[in-house]
Length: 129
Image (tube, rainbow, N blue to C red; front, side, top):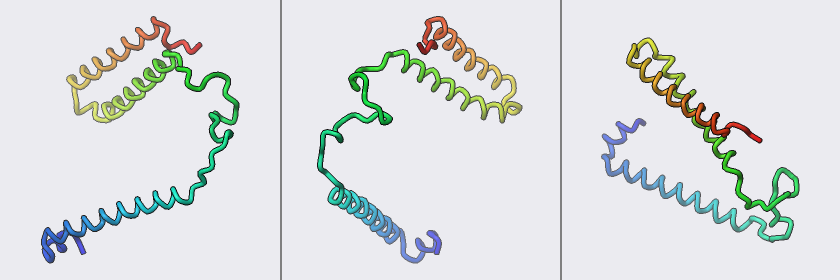
């Protein structure tokens, strides 16, 4: 039975009643699963469980030591150019429909990103070591 036929036969109030019942069932199911997981989960703590785990190796330094900023800059640079590739693909697909205006807009976009890359390169942000 489709939703349209159900609305005609029972009216809108019955549809809202069904949605409310299903929402209560979902909330009840999630709450039940969380409570059961909490009850049956092992909870004994030990010194071994409290240690920091990094790929099976013992930590060399303090795990809360901050990373150098250059790693964040490198990651953000990757993200920026990843998003640029995401914008370039749909533009290339409809390039013929956009005409000169679309070409100029994308040229401005790529130029701004290229200037940012040149700036980072000059500052040495792309050197990993």
